[in-house]
Amino acid sequence: MQVDLRDVIVDRGGRRILDVPALQVRSSRTTAVLGPNGSGKTTLLRVIAGLERARHGTVRVDGLPVVAGRHIAYVFQEQVFLRQTVRRNLELGLELRGTDRHTIQERIGEAATLLGITTLLERRADQLSGGEGRRASLARALCLRAPLVLLDEPLEGLDERTYSRLLDELPQVLAAFDTTTLLVTHNRNEALRLAQDLIVLAD
Image (tube, rainbow, N blue to C red; front, side, top):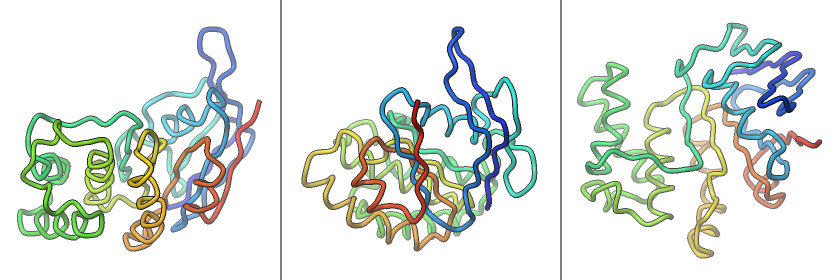
């Protein structure tokens, strides 16, 4: 699923937050958006997801105007879970998309295995550690089999051991689901390790 931006401008509080003359995110690849804090990385994701409107310009996904939530899975920087089990949190998004019960459990099993959270499925999601929560958030997004996955600082705030493991494992996990993935980070090493393509936001 290819994403194209043209002349996208976002202003907030009288300040220019984002100014993208032209940008293309190529289909079936992982692209990292690298830049310092405040450079507009999260705003770029939100505009692509349809969660925030640009003052000017166009965003198209496979040639069509973006519609919030359609064909997109978004992993926010801050983890958001219902106060239910991890399994139930993973089930809900699939149920809302009309997925049948057998397929739901099949997808949950596959994502949980790839992300190493099978033993966590019956735990309360709001009681997970930071690293466990990151894995559960990624599993929830990948269960949807959305052709476009947006990840906002997916490795932020993890302990060193969990960080190293996910940094090693995430490229293979994303490749297994054959999606177009756009992730943002301020860490150059992460960007180079996780992505095939690189976008730099500056000034």
